[in-house]
Length: 153
Length: 389
Image (cartoon, rainbow over all chains, first blue to last red):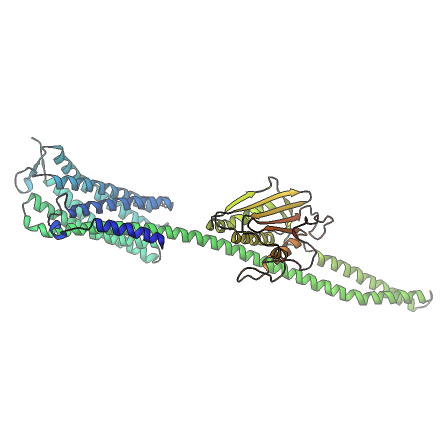
């Protein structure tokens, strides 16, 4: 009971401290870095990232990596973790990019790469897609291998 | 001035998002199959929940990124509100995925602990089952032996009378008397029956089964391994000082395990957290010695005196028979058990077992020395006397 109280008290303190003010007003500009919405989104990415690491640790702790299905899941989780890091950096770069210079119309639009910040936005956008698809593919293949030969009962 | 096209970025983004959507739907079907295969498997349930969350993520992610691109690069600010809603969904889904994973992390720990406990219980129940079987067989053998001895005793008495009178008849009968041959036949047959009864008695007294050449160190080690979780649960340090040489004797390992387990459990109950239980084995002339010492609360002299008295107990719910059984087991081995205890300092139990058996436990020509003064000793061959449980 004492242990629970020691857990709950700091949690309540942190909640009170970080309680959002003018929430709706802030959510209007949630995609701009510095708003509460952006913090929530970035924190969610970090949480996602940490949970993936936890899962990888758990797989190794339970010695499940000897099964092909779980090895593939570990790859999926590692890619998800990387994707979250990439998304974290990419969102920060995207939301802080001031007035990007875009030339052309429609599908011919081109982004002027005038500084490192713009390059970072472009590269992380590519990574964002490149990392996500293989992560889901590994998740699918991992599940497929587990359905064929479950391994963990 | 370097410019890069945005179209490949969008194409890659949407192709990736569509592929992800398809893969998540396929993954959801697979996870469902896993759950159907084994509905009680926590891991499959977790993967199923995760697959559901990932399908939602794939949908909201595709929509929110499309809206973001439309607003930023296609000048459609009217979509800002919808984009905010789906962006919020994205955040919620990430948190949900993290929560599911972290929850699983705890559940997995719980599962592993449950599995360990289950294995421990299984091992213990197998051990108890084996012990029960041995005990039942031992009791049956003992009962049969006693019945046989009783029958032999019952036959021997009339046989002595028949033999005695037939010899008297022989002495009183003349050499040429035809009935002398009958008396001789009676006397000879009576002697033959007597010899048979003697052999029968010898066989009935031989209780060698269950006793085998065993190493006391091995018995102690396996028992302590079995009881280690009890000691760990109470944070009690176990000190094992086993004799480097094997202490081989004719022991009944199952009975000795029962006795040692009872003594160790008593020690664990009496010892406060952070205490120490010492198990030592040694060779002492013709005896294998087992010493069990704890740093527990100890017992006053009046309790020590009654330790081996049947039905005497200081524990609530105790039977008062545990220590009686322990002494009985030591008796079976023709050994001696002594107990020393001081209040606040702990208790020491010493068991001396003759290990130089040449044939069977009963055939022992050397008996253990008398217990030192100031201690309670329960030597073998005594009837149910001092004891405690």
